[in-house]
Image (cartoon, rainbow, N blue to C red; front, side):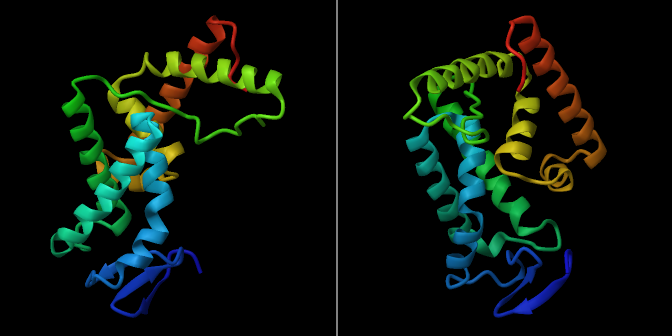
Length: 193
């Protein structure tokens, strides 16, 4: 049943089988890692645009979570929100250390053309380049919210908890950002398909 919480081991799990409350033990981190790694990686990759750096940063997120597990306060936020806050800080540190703005990539979100079809692959790469140019017109906050929504697959309420704004405001930002992207892509002769 969605939204229900049941006790399992040293922590409770919500319906998606993700650890949420209670003591975070070293033993529980195997399940936490397996549950959240892909979503954390996709979010970081959307913000960083580099596969290998995203792998390193994803590992760093779980290392920081493990080391600082005593700081996790389930009454303040769910486990996903806590992990994505750590991921956001890791991305900010990454960009600060490189003194450049982040590159936003949606490569992980769409279907990538088969390498067996060079024409389709070329068209897909061109669409991605157009999309990257379009994303550059957005503010950092808008790119971050899009990465959390479409890269990490978070719900508006989860994004709201991380960013400190209301879920309805997240919806408004997403809607306006997508309209900006669509207008930009339409002017450039490339439709958002």
